[in-house]
Length: 146
Image (cartoon, rainbow, N blue to C red; front, side):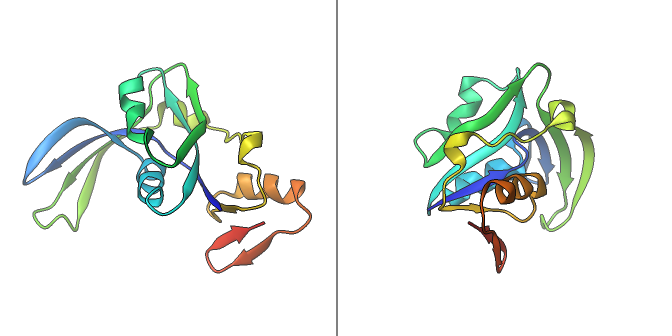
């Protein structure tokens, strides 16, 4: 079984009472894929700009993450900057720059189209595409299964 994640792969700048970092790998799809890779194989679909280097992509190496769906586009990657409170339970967004993510149109590689892939319900474009290519799609708690 594999899991499909579609979303943002980004750079973040984070400030907290404990320190500040100006450029780290971030994005919901990044965090989800890395965490899920401890439990199962993950197929990642996202977009990054030409500022996303092989060194940056190393976060996905030596993990059960297939990056065939990670598209590269001319321009800058998604960028988010935020400041966290003393107890880290609140944050203020300072900057959001969508960049190449603004025109992101997820493309599902053929190798990701397997009967044992779980689709997130937050990815309607992928679910719509999957339902048109499969005869039966059903909702199972918080996952779409084929």
